[in-house]
Each structure stands twice: as C-alpha cells, then as structure tokens.
Image (cartoon, rainbow, N blue to C red; front, side):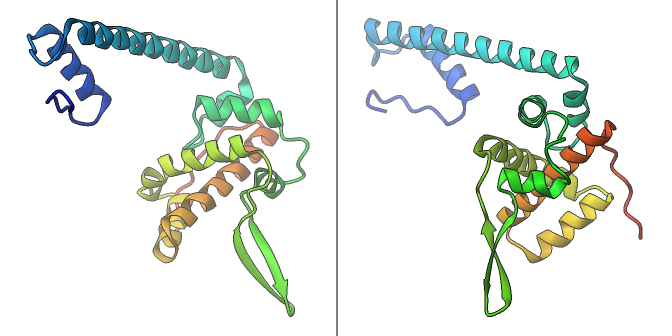
Length: 198
C-alpha cells in the first residue's frame, strides 16, 4: 500500500498478484524490492513443500497404526488428531469410560454447588490443552456436515443448536467425539453413523 499496490486477502490471490508484479514492469518497485519479494516467494514455496512433506508423514503414520486408522473414520478426526490421540492415550486403557477421557481433556462442565443446587459452568479447561484444541477445531469443522445428516448424531446436534450458542455446541460435540474416540480405541471397531429413528 505504501507504493500504491493493493492486493486482496487470501494466499492464492497474493501468489497470483506477486507473480504478476514480478513479471510485469511496475515502476513503483525498485530492483532491490523485487529481489526481496522473489526471495520471500521462494521461502514461502519451501515452507509449503515442507508442510506437504509433514502431511504425507502423518498420513503414513496413520496407515501404519490400526488404532489411528480407525479414528480417522470419525467425522472431525483427521490424521493429525488421530496420531496425537493415539500417542497420548494409546488404547485408552487408563480411562474406565469415555467421560473420564473427556474430563482428562478438560471438555466437561465445571460444577458449582451452593445450597444443595448444582450449577454447571463453562468447561474446566484442565488437562491436555493441545488435544482439547485439536478436538474442538475438528468438531467445528465437522459440525455443519454432521448437522445435515439423518443420523442420531445429526439429530442430537440440530436439537442442541436450536437451544444453545454455537460455541457451546462445538465444545459439546468435541466432548462427544472424545467419548467416541475412547469407545473405538477400546473396542477396535471403526465409527459407523447410525440412522436416526423417527
């Protein structure tokens, strides 16, 4: 903008605009600035190549591990989530039930009791921050497509979305995904979405 060049947001648009600027004859850019832009573009390309190599490595790890491969059948659980979960909890034998795993991840509501009346507050946020963040992002990514399905999970999501804020629904879905992860690791069977009963 300092030199009168405005580029729309987004990496594809930026890449196209930078290529056009470097190939064209822009009088506002000196030879030195063109060299710097070209250097940054090559560094950007190298980072993309490295990220792609790491993605391929995660995919290979998932294919090599039966538990991680079964976890990827769950909506919202990708290669990164699956490998991180298997590395952290193994087969889930440390947890007696799925709720214990969700509590370990900090995805259960805090309880405050006064005068014999229990009140549920926000999530505890105790436990593994990294895994909780992965599950919440996975739940956010899968929520729209899951809500549109005619499965028991989709029906539950639609009902919850009608009465709660979207962020609460995302965390509740992440909690449910953690419970499903535990069940799949313990039973050794993949995820099957069951049709909702009328």
